[in-house]
Image (cartoon, rainbow, N blue to C red; front, top):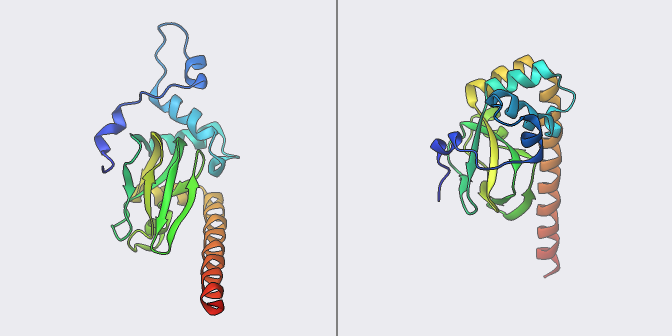
Length: 176
């Protein structure tokens, strides 16, 4: 099952923050709901309300049921994703990797270097994602240089983990 971009308009997930933000009969604007979701994402910690609002304006919320392939290794990357709710499994050519959860993000590597996706990401549960497309992603980075530092830190950690995995595999091969 592939991610359906049309699902961006359906939001069956409800959380206490959304319910508390609206009084009986009151309609909460989508941008306000997105801003509240963004406040919970560590990548955007330290952003003020205006900055979060700008991120909300250039993003959309996409949801997918468990088992949906969100990205596939080798495909062109045209979106960056932040998990709002749910879990995702990471699969690379080396094998299965970490589980990703709320606040984690993926898809930034293809947007940064223009290369094909380096991992397949599959929804391990029903999932809701914040999606930012390529052109908006660069606008976001230009407007928020702190994000570049945060993304570089996460990328560096991912490379180190991959190196550790490769070294561990090579050590096992040498011992056999």
